[in-house]
Image 1 (cartoon, rainbow, N blue to C red):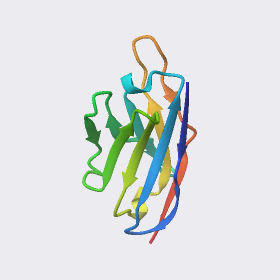
Image 2 (cartoon, one colour; image 1 turned 60 degrees about the horizontal axis):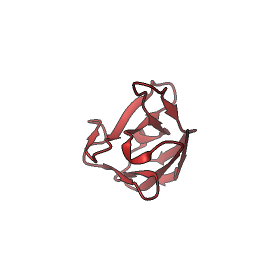
Image 3 (cartoon, rainbow, N blue to C red; image 1 turned 45 degrees about the vertical axis):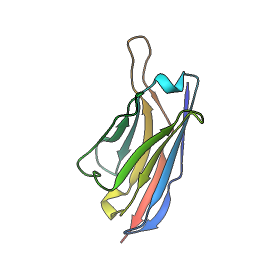
Image 4 (cartoon, rainbow, N blue to C red; image 1 turned 180 degrees about the horizontal axis):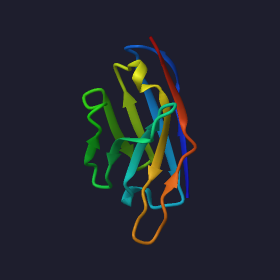
Length: 116
């Protein structure tokens, strides 16, 4: 199983980015995918979750500024980040959480830097 995160970069406060997570090695449409982030010196934080049926949840810190979506035809999950703030600066990781018979898998992370 592989998860490949991409789309990070340097943006100014108020800008937008769309992160992508390409997933292989699983039946993508049946899997929940999560986005986490880890800022320097801080613990990893769950940002958003999209379930196989399409329902979504968000951390309070990004609610209203963030949209998670999935394209089952492309085996890809997206994280649209809008109205970015310096405190959104972090490495963003996508994750396929542990299931009853499989371990969790992580992508390599993509760096988002928001300048003030």
